[in-house]
Image (tube, rainbow, N blue to C red; front, side):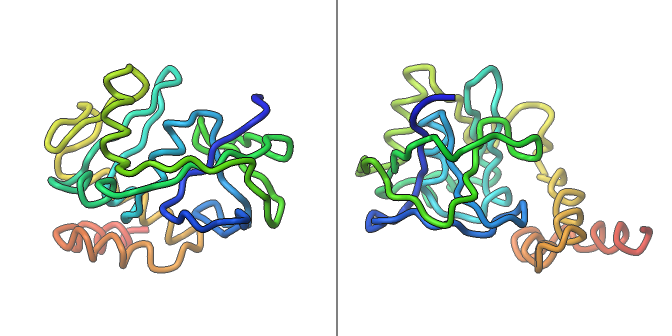
Length: 186
């Protein structure tokens, strides 16, 4: 593991990075050894409902699920907080490039400002550090109708993530019949 890790945020006023509960239902601080992966978390959207974040051969992949979302999420300023990696570890339930710390709070070593996240990501793509798929382009294993989200969000709900299915149906109301069918059949 490196001596430092990166934490992306849209908030530039963090003197301390505090632990929060996320989809893994654990109170922790997320980071990555890969700066570009952390950059993906500088923009705020609806997570998996807006984009697909993948990792292949140490290269992040960003897939836009609906037209215009990359501009909405990333066409704004963002911040990378550099943290001491000492308390961070990777666990098998995490996304490959993620590491977490169970510390309640950590003081950043430094903060790096990006005036436009999307422009920074495009620059990283030109340098071969990320692959970006703009809607409707995407890898062939991600369906154009985004129906891969149905089973994932039903699973989230069953894991105790409140309103996961409601959030899915708010963004993709066309999945209502399919979701109900799957919920009733199990």
